[in-house]
Amino acid sequence: MIVISGARLIDGTGAGPREGMDVFVNDGEIVEVSPAGARPVPNGAERIDAGGMTLMPGLIDCHDHLSSFGYGLADKWGLTEPSSLRHMRIASVLEQTLHTGYTTVRDAGGLDAGFRTAVDEGLIPGPSLQVVLDVITPTGGIGDHASPSGYHHPAPPNPSLPDGVADGPDEMRHRVRQMALAGANAIKTGTTGGASSRPGLGPKDTNMRPEELAALVDEAHSIGKRVMCHALGGPGLRVAIEAGVDSIEHGTHLDEDPDLVHMMVEKNIFYIPTFSVYIYHRAQGTPHGRARSEELTQHHIRSLELAMEAGVKIVAGTDAGGWVHCNNAQEISCLAAAGMPPADALAAATSRAAECLGIEGSVGTVEKGKRADLVLVDQDPLADVSTLEKGASVRLVMKNGAVAVNRL
Ligand SMILES: [Zn+2]
Image (cartoon, rainbow, N blue to C red):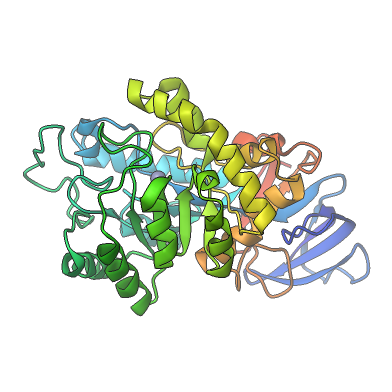
């Protein structure tokens, strides 16, 4: 047994902090949360003095790309370096991400299921993973890794990642089944372009028909998989919400169709704005990526405000893997900067994130019966959420009841 003793506790529910709490961990699970000293520390238990520090649930990112190191075609085709080197690079990212306090990450495309198994088996340290494998879209959609002239790589760069291109409702169903077969936890699609998509498929352009999306969503739900949908604005955003996807990724132009946020509440659709990635698209993107990101900035903030007012469940996800790794907490700072109260921004990366991933029964809060995924920090994240960035204030990370990092 391990007892983390005397911490200030932010339990992840969005409730106010509680001073001087003891958290008892046994066999990977939180078995007791009580005021310091109320319960004796059992003989043989390890006591960790957490006085003056803040204990929180392990952090969760609902949208990253852990195997992504660029947006270029050569990178998408796996041509820039040997796959062995790429795998070692990803393993290093997984370890460092865990060390910054992130105990669960959902990869939104590019990571194969072997990394999830490797972490679960303890072969490599890392956050618990959910994977979608590849993004299912029609020819020319965001999941089509064709060259600008329409050429496809003759051999799939990674046979563990089924190709995502599908045209027509039947092919959509086929691709969903293929992703599930190859180990996907959830299904990813995209009904619009984005900042980095090809010229001609911008943030408000769509190339997916409603009947295609309906088939994809129906097939995914019939086998118990959630659908995360990249959708920025215009008719593709509306189609996604009407079709009942489980989360809207980006949703930068929700403000232009304000009825949509109410539909999201009715249908219990989560909103993952991914502010982080647009910082990089604005500063370092392609010329058209920079222009698109500039244009959407104010809409994005207004969309968050409307979603908060309506009561949409807003969740933290960076989407920044193509630019930067191991600063997932940057998104918490972005949410706070855009007007979300700090306690709520922390819930977006803990309890609400767990709910978005369907794992709220086991993680996301510090409560008796939950898995012991915990982070101890030496700054007050409610006073300044940015102290979590890059794990700067992290002193201890526990995953599944085992200490993964100890800087005490
Ligand atoms: Zn993404």
